[in-house]
Image (cartoon, rainbow, N blue to C red; front, side):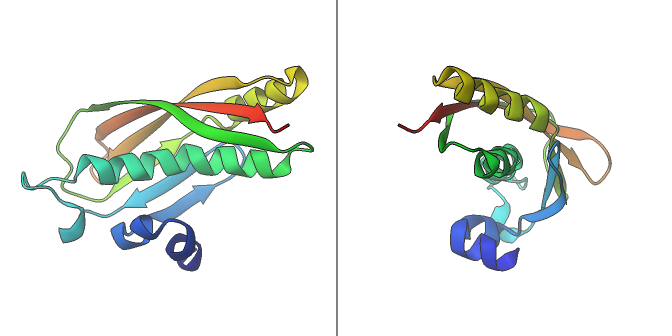
Length: 144
């Protein structure tokens, strides 16, 4: 995993992202609170949280795209975020929308048109408190 991060997502490697759980329906990724991840307000920088949150849904999408019989392109079309608490501990981001992603990709292949899916990634700190919620709109389109 460290080699994958270093080669494909070097900022994730530097930030210390780690996959905690991965299956076809759910991905959880942790990110530590450390010097390189903090902002001037002594909390975790929002971009680090965004990277971890996006990766949870991105892994689900990539795993599904790699299993399709037809090549499919994928891209984040939009992102919304809300932050409910300052992050000063390790955070685990989880996306449980693997089935929604799978269905959207299947619909895209069946219709031969681009389709979108809104998926959610929630960040929970080590105290069990929700610290952030991200909504990513992924677009999937069969390649011609």
